[in-house]
Length: 287
Image 1 (cartoon, rainbow, N blue to C red):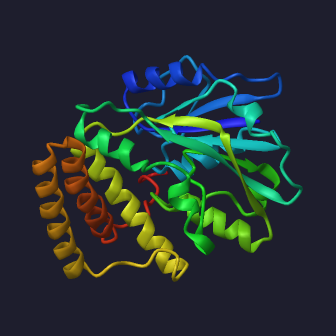
Image 2 (cartoon, one colour):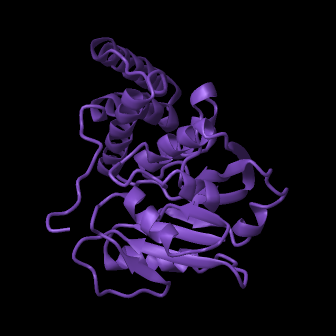
């Protein structure tokens, strides 16, 4: 298996990523490659194999570049903000996938955050926001998140991989194209990673805006997959939800209740606002 991890960040974040990925148990025919999508960092090195690919600043582009460097039958895509379990790769093949299976959806657990922890991270933990169930339960338009997914190389190359230009929604798009081509999806919850949550409100909001932008793109290309909600009614719902939830939190003195009252409307409304942002990123000038 070829493990590909897109990365965009500073030196300290790269070192932390290398330490987390060092926990992976790799077999003789397995490989690990971190694809550095950070502009202006062509010369830096790391404690893991590193490929610099910042010609287009999207995770999709980085994943495609990394996948092209390998030859294994399966490609495992992990996000840079996850901590994999050591036996992740072996667990993907228990049981063996079917002949027409192209996607294996690995498990994702949100980082445990204790009561009294950073508000944004605590909400994500309570909400189980990054779990695969979040997107696999939506019926016809279900898809696995590429924070942890294995892809059969033959199917990936047949369809041309991810769409390089997309900032978000590329996982849904690839899943839908694979389904149209007759490939199947299987779940592998035991092949798990821990997702490291954003610890600031700013980081949380930025993440939700990108997700919202991706949802809008998906809806334009796959009508009915991610329909928008009417903003005036949504804002009124957000105010009522926050006021009622905070009222209950005051009566019960429950901090988690208060966090949910604030962050649930913030999550949903930010998603909708993100739909107004462009989701396609052009190549860098001169590339």
